[in-house]
Length: 214
Image 1 (cartoon, helix red, strand yellow):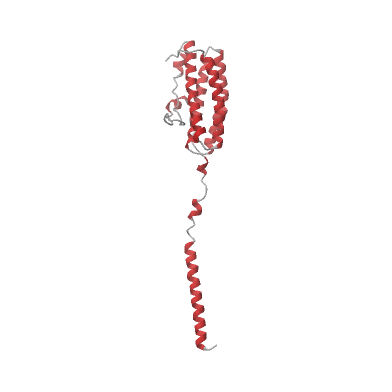
Image 2 (image 1 turned 30 degrees about the horizontal axis):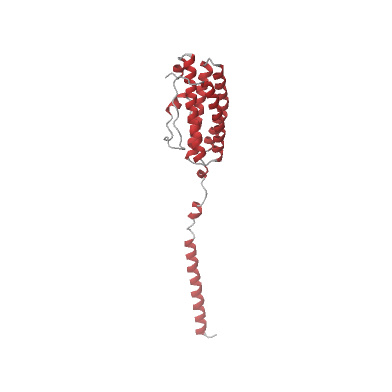
């Protein structure tokens, strides 16, 4: 191979190596488009939605309210049937409160206070549209209830229990229609059976048509 031919071969080799280097640089600068991988990662918040959270908080508040009302009945009712009903409500509601509290705590979400004053101040969670969370029914103070006659007391407590159950069943309906978390929906199913049974017992206690005192 003469000198001219050798120079041409070396030049061609140099150009080939330069081209490969440029191509390599282009590939390196294209790789940083990796944010798509991060965006594709599943989000833990997708496991539940606002309906699940609202239901858990509302159901806790309603069952706390039912427990407070049941305590008033245990202390002030003269009817053995109403006292027994109130005791059963207290017994059934605490495990339900504990389950929902554990779920909210697991997800670092606020748990409603058990203080009676907090019940009155809890805001409405939705309008009266179908499958939405109802407002928490208002409760009178203990002194007002205890100041009623025995007949008035029973009629008023039955009326308040009924309003509480109506709110609970409304919350359950909204959760079963719009919630997504299987744990919360399972608790809602259990609560539905409990609330239906309690409401049926309540109707028996109410008698024909009680006249509540306001």
